Amino acid sequence: MYSKFKLLGFLSLFILMAFYSLQDLSLIYPSYFPKPVYDFKKNPLKTTTIELGRKLFYDPILSRDNTISCSSCHNSTQAFSHAGNHLSKGIEGRMGDRNSPAIFNLAWQKKFMWDGVISNIDTQALAPINHPAEMGEDINVAVRKLNKSKEYRTLFYKSFGDSLATSERLLKALSQFQLTIVSSNSKYDHVREGKEKFTLSENKGYQLFKQNCSSCHSEPLFSTYDFANNGLPMNPELDDHGKWNKSFEPADQLMFKIPSLRNLGYTYPYMHDGRFKTLYEVLNHYEKGILKTPTLAKELQNPIVFTAEEKENLLSFLATLNDSLLVSNIDYKKK
Image 1 (cartoon, rainbow, N blue to C red):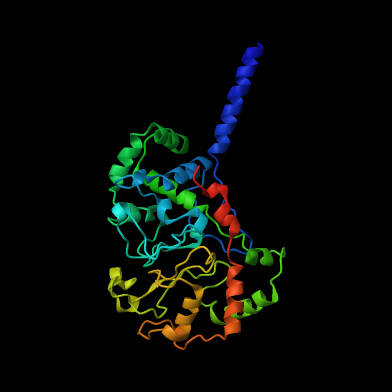
Image 2 (image 1 turned 180 degrees about the horizontal axis):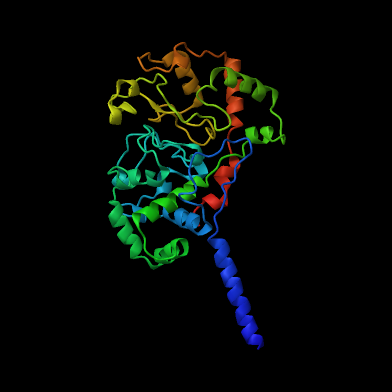
């Protein structure tokens, strides 16, 4: 009788653990953040699926020669950017044509890639997987490789109720993991929460930011995630026209996605082609380097000029947007 009750107890515990592992989770973010734009009803967060997505994110199995993973160009210790590389690097040492953007706070973004060509994060990973200079793999071949793996068949079973890997499940698992990457633990956030205070220099920089930068880099995400022409002369070697590359609409000429100013200390070099190594170079561009073209953002029709002291104050404030917890969070690292 005792062994029967003991067996029932273990069975109940197993069912309870399975129940909780399959329950929908909620994305955790500060109260002062806006509501995410991603529709979680279509892809509810689950612990098992997030873990599957994390495994896939770090696994080079998705590349043609099994050498490049998502994490190769989106390093967790660099706020999921490719710091130190002006362009992305793919299989066989091939060079991409754009700087790898940092990937955090994706749940608040409607468009993806520098030119916004992807409108759903659940399909975004198709682009780098298929790109010949990145992972260079056919998604169907990648799925076949996963279905040959006993480990992955087990993980897909835990996530979806059967062991079959499909492209849709693969992509949804990847998006689930990436959606959980939230940056909201910088000094700026602590100030918003009343836990810390800005220094005098940081506060002066904050005022300069609000006066000169906030129309494109609005709080608290520090980007509208819209598209703009910020006056960069086109790099003739890359021949990159931004959104125009796909739309061929004159109004899209040299329009690129506005990146967040969070975590700039980890995500250098800057701009879509990584042309600026330092933030001083970025500020110098807005003072002296703006190229006037028909689609130039209205906010940049006149140079943005700072004194040397103002530059230091502004940079002090921008440093408060660096999130050290993001780059050290074990939940985001390879298991």
